[in-house]
Amino acid sequence: MKTAFHQRRRALVARLRESQLDSLLITSHANWYYLTGFTGDAGALVASRRGITLITDGRFTVQAREETPGIEIVLQKGSLFELVGQFLKKSAGKRVGFDPTQLTVAQLQSLRKAGGGGLSYTPITGAVEALRMRKDASELAQMRRAAILAGEVFSAALPLLKPGIREFEVGAEIEYQMRKRGASGPAFETIVAFGERGALPHARPTAKRLRKNELVVLDLGVILGHYCSDMTRTVHVGRASERIRTWYRAVLEAQRAAIAAVKSGVSCGTVDAAARQVLAGYHLDNLFVHSTGHGLGLEVHEDPRVARGQTKLLEPGNVITIEPGIYAEGIGGIRIEDDVVVHADRTEVLTRAPRDLIEL
Image 1 (cartoon, rainbow, N blue to C red):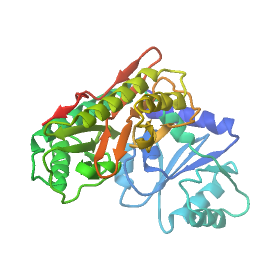
Image 2 (cartoon, rainbow, N blue to C red; image 1 turned 180 degrees about the horizontal axis):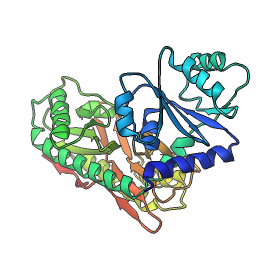
Image 3 (cartoon, one colour; image 1 turned 45 degrees about the vertical axis):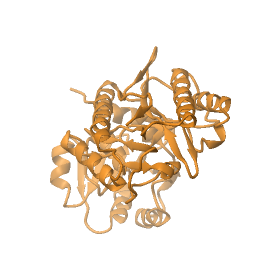
Image 4 (cartoon, rainbow, N blue to C red; image 1 turned 60 degrees about the vertical axis):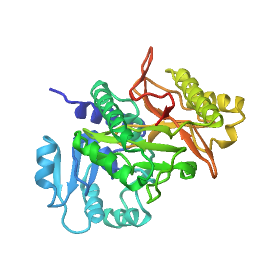
C-alpha cells in the first residue's frame, strides 16, 4: 500500500525531472518529515530518481529504521557534509540541486571538496516547500485538531486575566495547558502583551503586571501531530472606551473582508488588499505594519505569503492565517488571527474561538 510519504516522494521526483536534476540535497527537518516521516534533528536527505537516502549519525539510526521503513539509511561517521559529498560522488548522476536558503557557504564548500570536480551544484529554492503548500486530507484533519486545541487553550487562559498577574505567568500557563491537552509543544514562543506592549507585534512575555482598562494581546499556537496552529485574540480588561471599540470593529471588519476574499484562484495580494482597504476606510491603515497572513503547516511560517503585491494564486489545500492588526505606540495593539483553508469550492475557518470583543 502506497503511503502519503510515497506519493510525496513521487511528486518530488517529477519536479527533479522538470528541473533536469539527478538528485536533491535536503537539509530541512520539516522536509525530512514530509517526505519520510523521520523526526530526528541531525543528518541530510538525498532524493534522486532512484530513491531516497537518509544520512544520519548513530544517535538516530535505530529511530530512522523505525520511522522510515524502506528508506536507505547511511551511518554518518565524521563530517556530515564530507560524507554527503562522497556519497553524491559515488551515486549515478552529476547534477545536484540544493536550496541556497538552507545551506551555508561553508557546507557547500565541504560538499564540493569531498565530491570532486565531477559534480555540478544547482541552486533550487523551495522544491519541497512547493509541495507542502497543498495539504492533503490527512494533513487538513490534523490541522483542524490543532486549531481547535488552540482555541481551547485560549479559553482556559481567559480566567487568568485579572489585574496584577504578570505576562510571564499567563504565557507559562498557556504553554502548560497546551501540553496538558496533548500538544507536543507551542508552535512558537507564546505572545502575551499587556497594555502599551501590545503595540509590539512580536512582544514576548515580561514581568509586566496587568492593569485594569488595558488591552491584552494573546498570540498562541500548538504543535499537534507535527502540524501547527496559530491564532490571536485581543481582549480588554474592564469597559473599553469608544475609541478602542471603534478600532476593534475596524480590525474585525478587515479580517472578515480578507477571509471573504480567500478563494481558489485569487492572488495573495488581493486578500491582503481587502484587509487594508477596510482599515483605510477607518484611517487606520498607517497603523497596520505587517502582512495580512502567511502559510501554515509543519512550520508556523510557510508559503504562500499573504502580503502586499504578492501575485501567487491560492490553490485548494493551502492553509493560511488571516491576521490584520493595528498598533498604536503608547496605547497598545489589536490583532485578530484565524487559520483558513482554501478548498476548490469554499473557504473553511479552522480556529473556533469567538472573535467579538471580550471585556473582562
